[in-house]
Length: 152
Image (cartoon, rainbow, N blue to C red):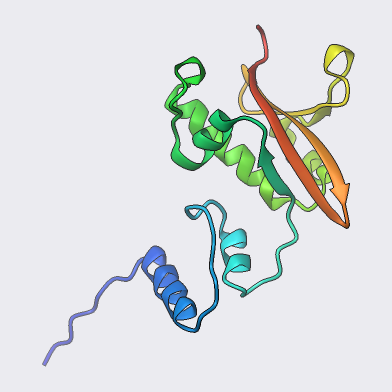
């Protein structure tokens, strides 16, 4: 007798583990599989030490979680949205703002002039994410202000 071997994807394994944990009355709240480390934290399997990312505008939140926005003024090409999600995941995964210097492609910088007090990282050559960071009780909070066109 030959047994059928079923392929189980990582997503299925994670969902089974989450269902098992939920069955044990552990509350699990998370956004749609944005970051694996964060998922482990929310499952209670690992202590999470990354920055807490907040969005100042609703269109930024929609772009990150849904990949599109209802606001017609803030529509972007799919490759820009993918890079935006990737950069926000990096922001979420680092412990401190100073750790962003390790990612040279992001070109992390503190802004000067009329945008003094803000910081930015590049999404690509044309777009950048502007944010403000603050440290509270050992946790760094990154408040994303805008996804801006660098040359407008």
